[in-house]
Length: 277
Image: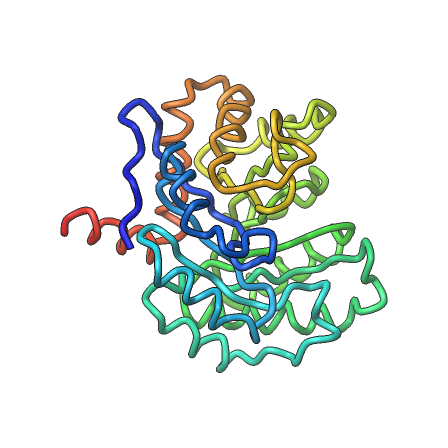
């Protein structure tokens, strides 16, 4: 299914992390994707958070040009879902629109009681990222010390690539991730008025390691804060990011596109082939 092309004056942007299979979007996926394209968001990665839902997420990616997908077990679900295996994740990664491993990670905010299970799951996902060469997609909340330790230990055991999705942790974890060559992704949180400390962390990072995302349907940036988020609103976060880095919107959007294509190289190749068709 080919969606409308964006207007010529809209910079091309990628929403590197959204959840198009969530009930919030039921029956509206086509309209959501069309609105994204109209806002210049020409590419999206929709994330599967429970492997049993992978077929539905895959179907969404297959149905829409410019929509790719990733799959893993969200840390908040790690204790209630069957433990993923490296072989299972590697098998899923054979699909041409499968572009990342995760989201996985650690979340001690509500689910600290499953910390050990989360850590085991995280290491399995890292092994799959290492084997496939696809980027790891990390969710981190209230677990900075363990997250930095595990990512560093595993990287010493064998290199892999990674994005810290919806980054809103502390400066220490940001530095640890950047030191490993990883990327930080800006969500609508970075555009919230009271997120000055977070914007300072981003401002201290190399601009060639920044991605954009919505985490839709959550965390809508102003002027939509408090309502359902959707990929089209990545454009608002891009404007906030351009201000953080003192760049024009066009230049910042172009830089984040290069960053995304460097990290998510499978999506970049597929987009290139589609454009040449």
